[in-house]
Image 1 (cartoon, helix red, strand yellow):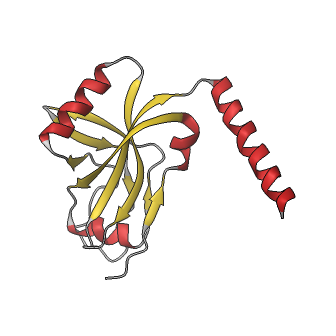
Image 2 (cartoon, helix red, strand yellow):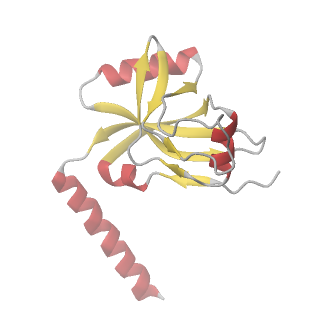
Length: 148
């Protein structure tokens, strides 16, 4: 099964320092996976939170499936993330520290055809950090241009 679906959250790399990354499964309905396979997903506003010791991704926008009937899904519903108990415990202790959050970074379909979400423990950047990362990115781009 050839799947080249890989949706990145470019905003996350600009807004946050990404510390630890985890790959989690997502609990989806039938029309949601069909929309993901067509690439109709937005990760920009998404974040993760705990509800009763379970991790949910909030504001992950999966567009309604074009050919769905009255069984179509709600685009911004809360979706449960599937992780081991050990990983959940580790994430819960990290997020209790001040300034840390869990954000989705990449949504992809693995070789078995299952949708997976890469999440990261992140710490928000200050304005001067964003400027600094833009400067280094620009200087790297200039150096690469000059080398060719």
